[in-house]
Length: 148
Image 1 (cartoon, rainbow, N blue to C red):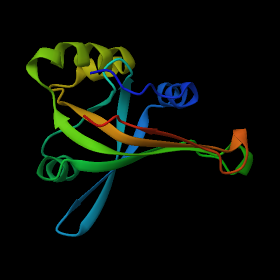
Image 2: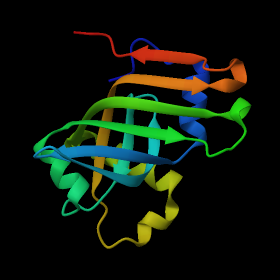
Image 3: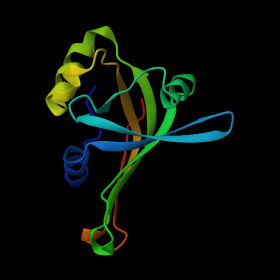
Image 4: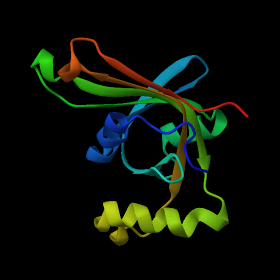
């Protein structure tokens, strides 16, 4: 499933430039975060993430698939601040698209071939917000998945 509406070009470029996101989950009112490597699949409109299903963040996300995540550039220069905040759902891959997802993830992270087991997950965004101070202090670019 491709993203509709299309991502603003600056937002798509930011997602392609970076590779670590901070995933936020919750269980029983207790929040948790985990830093995760990702590859963005613009054609399918999803983030690909590898993680062991026994980790706390995966257990929580499988119990409660609605999650949030953030990707940011670390800088002390206010005029260079850029980052994405996102909400969406985490899901396991369907068999029919697992091979394509695995190939894309391994192109981004060839070292992952050495892992004895590569469990991939899809983060499907519902809402993305890019803050880009290079365009003017506090400039926001928003994207929301079309309903239906």
